Image 1 (tube, rainbow, N blue to C red):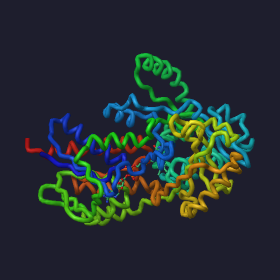
Image 2: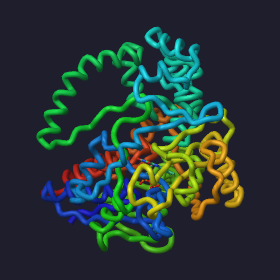
Image 3: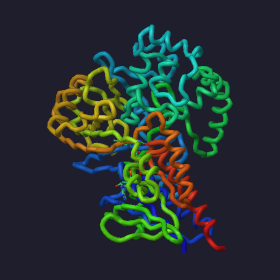
Image 4: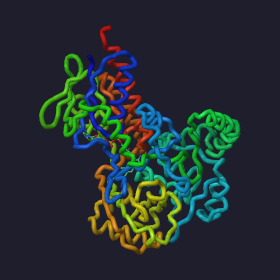
Length: 481
Ligand SMILES: Cc1cc2nc3c(=O)[nH]c(=O)nc-3n(C[C@H](O)[C@H](O)[C@H](O)COP(=O)(O)OP(=O)(O)OC[C@H]3O[C@@H](n4cnc5c(N)ncnc54)[C@H](O)[C@@H]3O)c2cc1C
């Protein structure tokens, strides 16, 4: 029987382990999968804490249903009937600008009439079809947005969105690695996003008809985004998004080993040996490394020091998540929406605030409200290191300034992520190519996880599924029959 070790039981490792088993079974190959997890729990960055009647997300609060991968995983696990889409009201998103919250329009026409950008800023955006080509093949998000939409759109719209998704710095992050769709659109529109959008609009009517037909037949459709936010509906479970990783873990049963930190990977005569930090080792034909890049670096040091060095070059940001529970009656604001983002220039401590109990049912007890703030990120890492008291004080101050909330929260939880989200800086794509080239000397060793090609749950699931496919192809070829 072939054996595969998977390292790291976040969504990436759990998904990889699940699909290695599934694909091997489909290929008629018997495989023994062992999942090694350093900590005493599964889920990694996904953690839904049930506390005083609240369901509080320490990290991710769900995935978008405009991509197929997580939905397909839920189908494969038989848990699709438990999926809980966010409420329609969560389509409304806000931004805090010049001292007040403003709703982000859902369409380009809406933007034209909104007061989010000045007339000068809007005129600059209108010049988008005349965008100059990029000077560099791999440019920063800031440089891309400046070329296409101008400085004001960068500061007021795109930079806050980058901190909302990556807790990242648009002046350092790579456009093509962080937002490959935008890079593809630019190509499609011969250098202009607007031309690409117009091209797509022509096809949209036809597509709408097709989607409506598919929907009628009971098929799933993946809807495109709007100007106010990414496409799709944020989706979770009544128990929180951790229900997904817990279900995956339950399918692995005794082959999931908690408290087992992988220290190094060595080649053996007929495969690989994963040495554990404390004691013991696991011999296997193939290894999926689904731990964060810095941990993968230590494990791979003995196989290839250059790969380890490249992996260490992928930085992570620090982030604190602060959750406040309130008596609903003590908040004057209607909380009708997803929440809001705060541009860096507004000088607040919070990067934004999510109105969790408005987005989803079951997030707060009857008559209460749950708000979650993000603090820190690549442009203000030191703030993630504030003491609990300082964090609470700063978040309360910011909620007073932005939403007029004076009340004292009746519930407070703080979750700290020392290395929250990997940052795809300029040069990331080239780094991945170098890593992959060197790993060709180690067939059967596959890297997956949020450090490489997408940080969202959907992208982690997609990459893990691809990793599982590669591993099963490898062990099947290796089989003597
Ligand atoms: C605050 C926050 C909010 C987010 N919000 C969203 C959101 O709303 N929607 C969305 O789609 N995404 C969101 N994300 C991103 C998404 O949650 C993560 O990118 C994803 O969960 C990462 O999964 P992973 O399995 O790749 O890595 P991780 O979750 O980091 O898992 C890696 C695992 O490897 C283990 N490990 C480490 N070293 C070793 C070792 N030596 N041996 C064995 N095991 C080891 C770790 O303990 C961990 O369990 C958010 C992330 C954060 C931090």
